[in-house]
Length: 309
Image 1 (cartoon, helix red, strand yellow):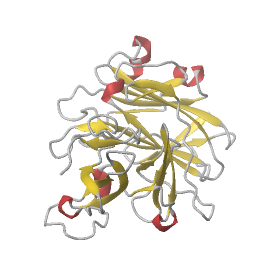
Image 2: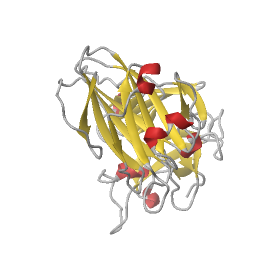
Image 3: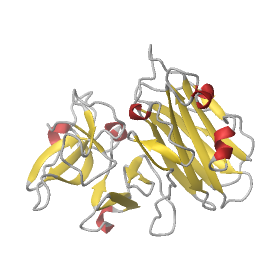
């Protein structure tokens, strides 16, 4: 049995509290979900990975969704072993009720699965993005749709601070499931052939070859010190600085919350683009994956606006 405790925009009855062993599930979508959009809501089921979680009734359903695609945050805690493995199934109903999606082969729906192992007395931040390119793509019980293709269910591993503590935040920090804050210990991203891996550290402690990410979408820049220079009513955006190298046409060196006008262009920079990990268009430009439109195949899993400024 698993117990869900409410945080953020999702609601469910509080049954018990088992300390700091928890998974914080942050559910987001790039599918229109407000106004007259054909949005039927989201359901979340928890259980043992595989067949069990697929057959479980939802621990909650909600139609909550903001204009920016934020559905809400849910805390999931163990009622038994605090080292147990848990399966999580998140279903968005677009043209169908999310609770009937499975029975109809997920037509008109998006399903996202995760397999995660609890870490005793630690909080794991897990972002689930329900994206339009996964509508109707159910995969099988041991796989989940990511960017239109089926992949293994993701086991999120929290970033570990130098003092042994665990950090978490909204910024995606690599394929290993780490997420980092927008201030303090930022995402130090290691890029290797075919993937990325990250951890949260003070920028001064990041390796020289790491990419330091303060943000991966402009909504994360609200309230973040943008270095001054913002006009009245102007919002900061997440700026990605690109440079030319001997081996790449363009390579990301950092992301930072700044006014577009004040984005710092490092020596040799070839451009600045806005990040859009939320898959939303920004300033009139389309949001594309790193290997689509910007010739940046070296950084899979990240999204940018199609044009620089």
